[in-house]
Length: 138
Image (cartoon, rainbow, N blue to C red; front, side, top):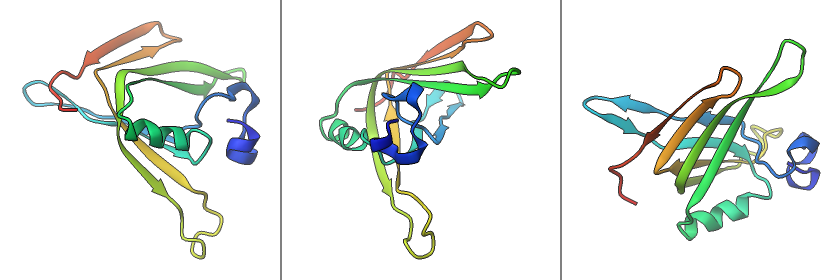
């Protein structure tokens, strides 16, 4: 998240990370667990061309999504991590807001991932779990 990459939203302590505005993921169950894509919304940044190349080349990725919160001392702390193993980008969408109706809006993109395995770790509570997405077509 450098100044050149995302402008005034840059954070020195997270220079080689993607700023994720929003993350969505679903698991459903009827007879067995059903995995759905994990989707993030992010600003256009230096990773955008690389993500386009990754979907084009069907590149296998390992993705880690750290989640931060403000602790009782007012300091950001890492408290949760979602990790995707053997992931691939399955959908990449560019969103450029209307320049007249939303003149302050910034270009963003949504990136959706399928994966072989997902794990969740609550760092501060010391709990973790994982699940495998077995029956999917690449």
